[in-house]
Amino acid sequence: MIKSILVPVRGDGMVATVLAHAAELAKQHQAQVNVVHCRAQAKDLMPQGIPLNDFARKVMMEQASELANRQEDHLRGILRRLAREFGLQDEADADGSVICTFAEEQGRMADVVKHAGRLSDLIVLPKPQRERNLGQSSLKAALYGAGRPVLICPGQLQPDETFAQHVAVGWNGSLPAARAVASSLDIVGAAKRVSILTGGKVQSHGPSVDELVAYYAMRGITAEIVRFNGKDPATELLKSCKSIGASLLVIGAYSHSHETEMLFGGNTERIIDKTEMPILMAH
Image 1: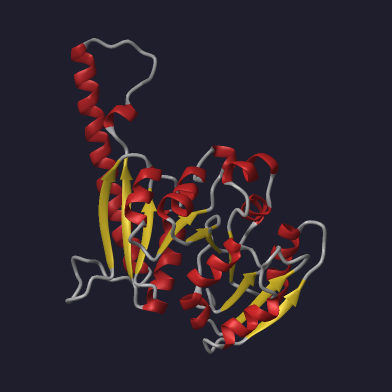
Image 2: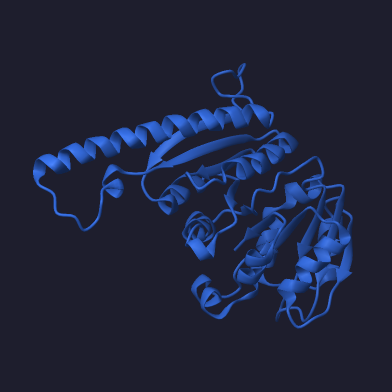
């Protein structure tokens, strides 16, 4: 049951897309959205490599703290405006039930994700930008540190009423894929159409795609099987999603270690890099 959706934010220009996706799911599942701003610490805003006397350091620390306060006030205003635009009720305006909360935590984004994510049902993050070295540590913290499913939102994509109404589930019988299936039952159960995408060999000791169809059927979910072929499963999976008109892809993340996939280009990394659609992942 999805009742608590975590949205960690920072000043990276991706606030609107992550909050929009969280809002759509919150409205579909009557869930609460908890927005947490990762506040920059004053010492991290100080110039590096420049020797300063005590007085100059004190003045610059005060200025950095004031800058962080202004950034926080500005972002909070943006978040409240976006929440109203996306149909979320502000906690200050709520009539007995809080739908969207706003909080601030100091520290590294990855640490905030670990702390706040462990008691969340879903964590919503922007698509990592490897060329700018943004987002990889947050995704790793969510999957490994918090142990929660993660919804990745690409670019400036804005969801509409079709979001999560046709869910594609990538299946290869692996443990991460099984965890993704278990973590997404509420979302899959609420969808109007469910497609199971499969290609290549099922992993050793892994259940077949027909067994997954039966698993869903016991829960009142009707799923169709879509098979794909090709030497690059990541590309074929995304191509299949586009051809059938799916609006959300559910996959297991990192069958190998996160570091191994980053070094050698595993399927998960290629899917994340190439995707133009939202992806729900679990490890």
